[in-house]
Amino acid sequence: MEDSLRPGDAFDPNCPTRLVLDRIGDKWSVLVVLSLLDGPRRFTELRHTIGGVTPKVLTQTLRVMERDGLLTREVFAEVPPRVEYALTPLGRSLRAPIEAVTAWAEANVGAVVAARARHDERASPAAATG
Amino acid sequence: MEDSLRPGDAFDPNCPTRLVLDRIGDKWSVLVVLSLLDGPRRFTELRHTIGGVTPKVLTQTLRVMERDGLLTREVFAEVPPRVEYALTPLGRSLRAPIEAVTAWAEANVGAVVAARARHDERASPAAATG
DNA sequence: CTGTATCCCCCTCGATACTG
DNA sequence: CAGTATCGAGGGGGATACAG
Image (cartoon, rainbow over all chains, first blue to last red; front, side):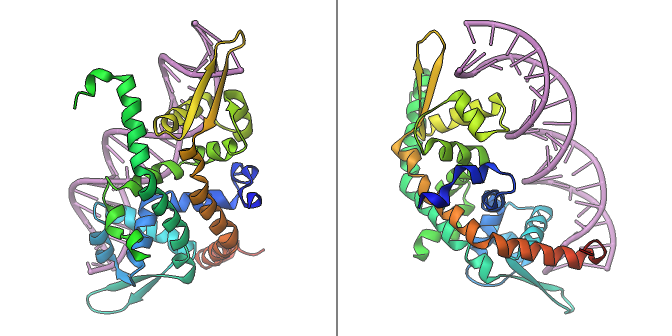
């Protein structure tokens, strides 16, 4: 198992890990994957589902993900323009690592929050009167 | 299974997932965890092992991780100052999600790179004369 | 509807220099 | 050795306005 966790790897900018980190480390990308897990979505649907994302940033994210083969962009030449984004099998496979992260988060968020509170109280006990 | 992947969760800025994403999405944090998996390390050792990280940024990273209860900072009052950083059980548990990401990366980096090449060639065929 | 273009601000990172 | 202080550059993100 340790073989797959060679620190030396990730330290290399060309390491595949860095490549993925840039992707799943980006909140918008993760959100897009999550949104698309259910099935194809249109640009505006994505915008609405994710919320708080500007068209520029969403387009940016989508483009990069498309380039990486994570999703497909299908344009329908209709009177009201329609574009559907769908996860590729590759994109769908991102579900595993994302799930691992999510699982860790849900399992340990309490500990992290507690640690923070403990730390902050030491730093400024006066402010921790709540 | 789907229950742990509720999109609605991650869309919430207060969601635990966001919290973790900010941590494992940060390359330096990941690198620190990886470095510390073997055992405690000193500041300079980390600096050297990770490489390319400035003292300021490393300190920053370390401080945040300490606050989050991911690692401990032990100061030895010796003539040549010595400070050792060690992963807490919580920090060590980050190994799982990181491993998931690493596994995905190693398994699919080829597909991603291929997708990129394909995409880039379509975008600028002239440049892809190799 | 589906984007694109612009401007702007913030924030992080990096380099350098200095202190305990 | 282990950090901290400062400065500057850069990218990303967001808001807005506009185009096909």
